[in-house]
View 1 (tube, one colour):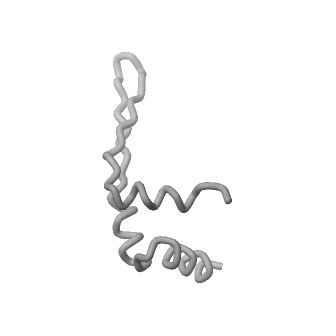
View 2 (cartoon, one colour):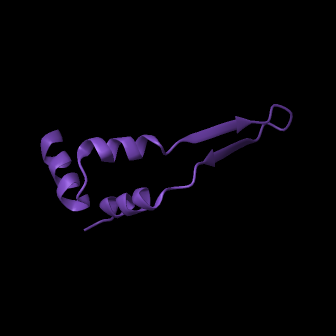
Length: 61
């Protein structure tokens, strides 16, 4: 199953799986908890143009 998914990603994006995984690892989240108010703030890095193209992979067919 993993081989089919990785092949689909390669054919759709035109990039290798290694490049895809490397780019996806750059997407990180940070959760900061304010201990006084108890509120949690979530921050995410800005997506690169290449990562924005990868978002198209997850759209429904």
